[in-house]
Image (cartoon, rainbow, N blue to C red):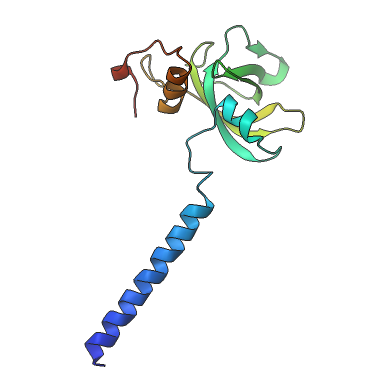
Length: 150
């Protein structure tokens, strides 16, 4: 084998090893490569308490309860299932009932989602694609196709 052939063999072998490693990583993380879980996903997948996830959906009408020390309780729904959320801190200015929200945190042993970060929609036309798709599947989508952002 010439020097050039050895070099090409080495580079090809390294490429195969890198591709295999990337494939294994993607396979191992395939359940976690989502922007967020809907309340129905939380119920059907039976996500274990203490596992960190993003929970997305709509803030249920009439569910926001403000308590002392900036603690807020509210429910996130996808119109099929609902998850109770507890958050301590200042909510985004755009947070309100009936609007899209994505929360980050863990599910407690009592089934209440303990959020440490709350993200609200950024303008009046934005609905996360996954929420819009879930609402369309249930037949309750009210927006236009051009109103959602990818």
